[in-house]
Image 1 (cartoon, rainbow, N blue to C red):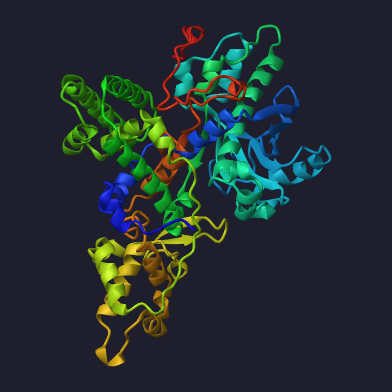
Image 2: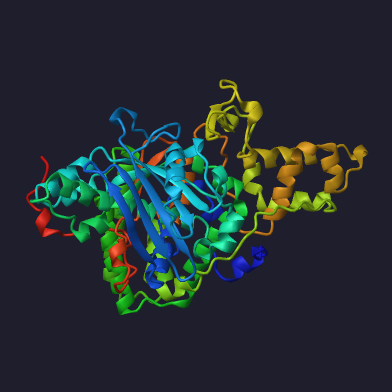
Length: 577
């Protein structure tokens, strides 16, 4: 288990305080960075030169059928099996309750055995209703973009490259609606994956790799259909356009509780990010070359933000405001660069004058221009999610821990109707998290432990109001009298050894924005462009700008940070009016 005793050390090495970092709005302002999972995965497969070959491509003229990619890594063999089926457009849905998809896939360990194809064809398209074997690592599905897929094929089949501006409106040809791993439906569990399949020993790396190959299949399938439609005139997608096309994703409440239910892992993720930032700020100096790199990346970020298409007015306003902030920051750095001797001068100027979004974007840029410093922290520190109860702990010490490290939770008045208006539960139909309104919706008796602030405040109040006559002196005696607090006390005792594990927010509040939780987790995945559809779910784009399979043996430059539209001459003149 990783070292959790960071409380005092954090102050000594200049880490930001948890009061700053773990604010829910700030967490919802994080951007992907150098150590995000997608970036790490692509560095790994590019530097190790994974051999990814398309060994079965049995698609008809409309692109329906099956395909198999075989993957050879320095350590293992895997195969990725795809089933592309006809789907009535009226059935195409981002909802997890959907029962049919344009594409279903699985990532499996070992060399592909053609004899398995019948079994896989009977089960993979069923998804949750099917059954996987223990050498299966990931099960997923995806749907076509109704705006992009047919348009791209029509252009290619007529001998033209698609308009890059049109591509940018969506950013992908397919979007995933669920990516399952870690032992679900009979697949290999996480312990087996991280010990037996070392290529995917990082959290979510197998899932991210599956999304990468879904993207690759979408490109291969588009080229195939275009050629089948018109062999004499069809052209293949330009490679620069292929790299700019990502894989879409629809993420809802199902992802939100993860940050609360895995606080040790989240502490590890965020502490790593904060340590990288602290090292850059403390151990580097902004010389002429680094200032130039900083300004170049800020300029790219401005273009990136301005190219994001979203109908969500709040997100659109955020993107515009951050873009404007970055222009002012760039002007400041340009005018003051002869006087800037420490990066803290820049970050302090940003903190004093600009939004949280701008602050976190600048932090990400700083990390990006110091790859050597960032990559010192790349190795995964394994964290076991074990929460130990310390029954002999004096109750007075537990109170002190709550007062010192959970003061944020004690500030809420849960007697207020609005402060305790929301409860989180799992739907019986899909076992997916949902939000209910207390005193209106049924299910409060099945409430998940998501409202950490409320549980802590209730536990603390109960301790405060104990009668001296009961002579309760330690945690064991208190839990014997109040067993309902066993779980939260175990969490408090364990998390007291960490710095960044707890999100400092009331997740039972009437106006809580779960989308901040989604964006925080997605930023660590490496997800960039966000298109919120409500406060509860968001569409986003993964791997946009990343290499494609045919790039693997080329020299790799890890520079697909804030991707922007490529300047493709052959796409000009094809605008859709």
